[in-house]
Amino acid sequence: MKNVSLVLFLCLSSTVYSSVDAKKIQLLKDPNGKNIKLNNNDTVHLERFHQMFTMDARTPGLQAMLKRNAFKHKQKAVPILIKVMKESKYPVQNRWHATMFLAQIMGPKSAPFIAKFTDHPHWMMRVASLKALLGLKQKDYLSVYSKSLTDPSLIVRVQALDNISHMKLDKLAPDVWNMMYDQSNYTGQKGSRKRTSIVKSIIRTVGDLKYHHAKKPLAKLIQKPKYQDLIEELDYSLEKITGEISPNSVEQRRKFWQKLAMNSASKKI
Image (tube, rainbow, N blue to C red; front, side):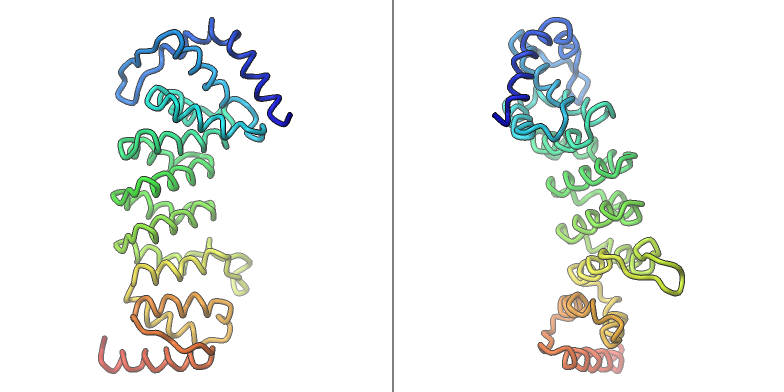
């Protein structure tokens, strides 16, 4: 019974939308601007699919139904997915799904279009764009990822770090390291600022990218008791950067990294 609202909607739409509104679907074009040839049966089903995106995203069973129809129609669904992504009249959660479906159906060809949404006014669409680009393993959008590291939304910045870390975009390591000094990643007044959760992600990403220039500063931070809450992340990154394995206890770790930093300095490494 939980899917009754969705079932009722689909039954009604098959008669209501197959007449007047169906003509709108026939006018939709593919990403290259060419008309997609549809038969009458296609038109009815695609208009029904289109109208699903106008529904409350919390409707039981809606997400599964959207996914099933998107991959059923594949290329023929693309114009609808693009329309949903571009227009604010659709619930933003449904626009998120449209972004993911478009990436999966079109593959890398969709990347240039999807990348534009990293500048979208709504943070959820910016995250969706980044997540879709990660799924497509798009390593050529360095400027897009770099810009997203300073996004006003913390969630967008976290997703940008995830993209950079998973795709090993080491050219962006300096940009990631600069986030340690970005005040938007801290809360509170000057002089009493507190780190937000993203700082741990920044430190780990620096390690994943093996950013050598961060080794000395990280080795200094791990010596300070006020960074006790970051010790696991600091140790993780230092191990990644140096290739060394530290001891288990906190005090031994501090001595280990201090000695390594001193030896590196004496060798001018």
